[in-house]
Length: 395
Image (cartoon, rainbow, N blue to C red; front, side, top):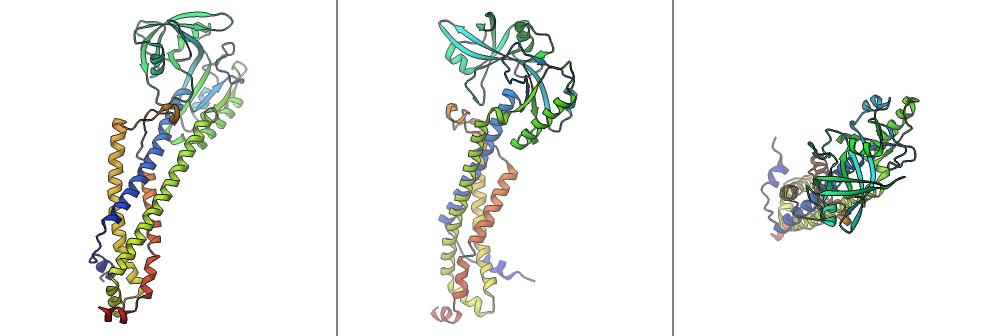
């Protein structure tokens, strides 16, 4: 049996370039907002995980710079933590505050010693005391790869060491004011006079499926409970803390971005919906005689409404397709070129990050399309007011 509303809707002439443009721009803005929000969240979470782990085991005073209170790098409960759902990697690290003296300038830095095999560890070859420094330190101190860097470590007594700059790295996120200098775990242990199994902290990275705030907090509580349950007398006291608590300001900022994204989605959906209401009214007025004719032939108001809703929906889908294509092109270009830059002092990253989150994009498009379709039901109420006798006689 032929679908009469669908057949008739395909033969209605409705060419509205302005409406198509508004729909396309609305979806372009919506999808860029979704992609940028997802990009910020992924970039910042990934970098925070790299800086200090999603979960961190530290001495009870939470002071990883206290060189007099190391913890065991291989505690008895480590195997239990490895079996926790979502745990991807466990890294023992040593932190040590230092002062870099370059010429007449001095700069406070935070040394972080990482073990063999860690991608952040500088390439040493046969060179001892090699470090990888952030670009910001090279900019303010003039250091270059191959230079020697004089560092003063302040404690019970001042220790002076000459480090070799083996590499320069650019942090994606400047989460705080610390200049983190990466060194080998063994070098910092020797400077502190520690044993091979003594470290400042144990950093635990979670996989991508457990990067949400709730998942990180749940993992932190679980790991903290395991530490208390399986610690032995030979283990140093340790407590678990999450990146959410250590960088609460950043996570609050990410939540604000999500709120802004939601506001943009609602605003653009309303704009597109109002645009389609006016466009559909124009379509109805242009085809008032057709409405009268269909009524005289026995078609119900509901069936006639379906005719015009189907025709307008095709326009919305066409605009959605154009807007989606443009948004994807923008995201791909931005992801590869980073042509849109930001001030890290205000936005924590140096460029606009984007991430094409397909499930989230599909949900946003489906919800907005459903809302626009519901809004288009309002002008179709006009159909019930059309008198077939008058409209056909006027024609």
